[in-house]
Image (tube, rainbow over all chains, first blue to last red):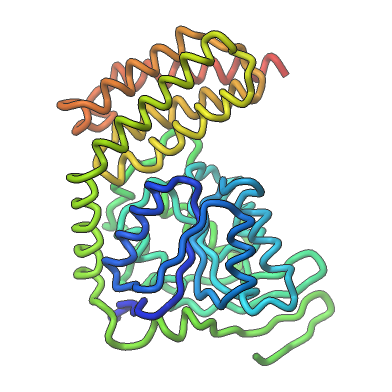
Length: 194
Length: 169
């Protein structure tokens, strides 16, 4: 399956407190063909940007000051009158411990990507969001993408083959999860594993 | 949007603008897009990454010098922690895996300090030496597994500090 993504004219908001990290992400996204990039370094600026315009996807650092990406994600998902309420949210994290990844998923994030990032991993997570339809769930305690879904296969076969190489950048040590395991956490309750 | 209500949840399908537009034909083919993104990273690596690395390391060292005389200062600990995270997050993307490894180890140390572990100037200086070494050739081109003694030693030090932090709770 050809799962090339077309990012032209999509409004992408990059939220990270590290200015150099934002430049790196901009470099990657421009390489992918994106041409409408916004960037902010604080969670309050994210909320401001979202109140001003339609944003097509948010890439947000998990530790974004002052509230952090999880609280920010919950705030975005809770805001009933926002045009950006269902926008995809990709959380970038330096701390890929399983408990943290599950918290991100339960806050309403569409996907988590481990830092340091490579162009390949960022591209494939964006393609996955684009090509994997997700229902939305609205309950008293949760609004966000259905956490119970089944991955039938990543675009381009990523993460599904035994022969796939493990993450080649910064393989996690200790309790942190490699990207493939993060992906599996998003492949959840239908198998009853969560 | 079509709605379907159950006892506990409203479930509905959303096709976001991102999904609609990202699936349009005419996008850059995957391999070409990744290669083009990597080329942009390589330009950054050749131009301003060395300067950014040097500046960030110097900021970290300045903060640590202040911390040595004020080890209880939570603002300084937070500052040093943030610098370490920046180095950790950027290092391996630019091919400096040992910088990421050492900075990650150091971040864990600062997390332990935030959690209540006692400040150890020896541990901090050990990491400062290691990250300074890791930022320079030939070490900046090596992976942690190519320097197992240093990597294992740093891990053991931080594990001990984390254990100590748990005991302090």
